[in-house]
Length: 258
Length: 294
Image (cartoon, rainbow over all chains, first blue to last red; front, side, top):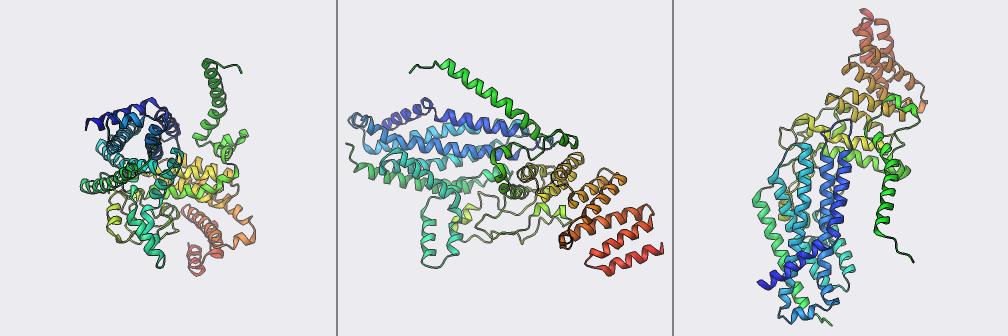
């Protein structure tokens, strides 16, 4: 366990050494503040469009940070040849996968917490209303979703040749799931067999990342999601994360490092 | 090649930022506030804004999307996607067109029963009931003032397409409901500047003067101007059902105004105009006969 935490610590330190997080945070802050400074019809109480925009930027930034960070972990170790002394410690390949996963997941969670803190300050100062529990729930759900994305990216980084191709493919897949995932069943019903069966199979196979997106509820003041439903979603996420980590380990176990 | 020191680079960046700020800030500041009628003569039009600078004429394509966003906010996010059964009727515009604000309508429940367990779980994480911001919102006790959240999208729709008449009329209607008649008047002025001679906007302005600013004289003048503009249109436009409805509303309101002030001959003249465009001329004739007796 200590080995895994040691690897995790290295990845977390990488987050604040690299510029990705700072650039995205400043960009999010500047765009949000600029949008918030616009006054429509001299009414200072209009706030939902700012919340909406800020949450969209947080989602995009979190995905960018997570995918870019997770995609370069194992390829960078191979390229700089630090993987050999690491494996000679001795550290097993499974521990490397787990260490990298927890490192990326915790690092993305830290970045996400900073983004949510900024969001809470900006919207709270304008609305004079602090629904802390709703923000906490949205944060937890998004962080759980980032766990699946991290595990998927680690698998991609082992399967695909270069980090750039991993990042591109993962972005397309994640964006595809977020935009189309929940509608695949509707699309399936509008098609004849065998296409209907194929689309329905894809619908049940893919990890439904959009389940964890409660932005619309949060922005439009729908209140808290039932914690039992959140628990079910967390179990669903844990199953997919475990599956992707297992596949990563199986692929990495047979991978030639030279 | 000589290396430039970081200090000089920073200075160069600051200079670029300052130059850009001097260009954009006055434009953005002017864009933030709905301009008053007097501003129109200063050589700057509403369509001459940041969006025109960035998107050119292509910005008109986005106008309808922004109007839909106003409707999405009006429903607190409960809205059909491109994959669901869509209703072309926009609930946010209904009250502005004199239709009932029916938030309890079950006909708009586009979701139906969940087809599988995943969809059932998914519905717990998204807005899942048909509600209107004007009648309580998702919790049932949201104040009507929350409708203000739709206003940015209506403003953006008109910035994108200054010829989007419905966006001005709907925006002005909700501004009046939120007790902001001055802002509603300025918004309609903006629409009239971008669409000179539009009878629909003039009719709404007249109604605003009468109902919200309680100035019957101004209302009469605006409606008379609206009627003149309507009559000056091509015959092809005048025979259009929607255009005839606008004429009917203008003339009927003028007739009521004259009736209230006891000017019966003028009221009868306006009722005759209503009769020409009304789908139910017999009922109007009865009103004319009754007015003649008084």
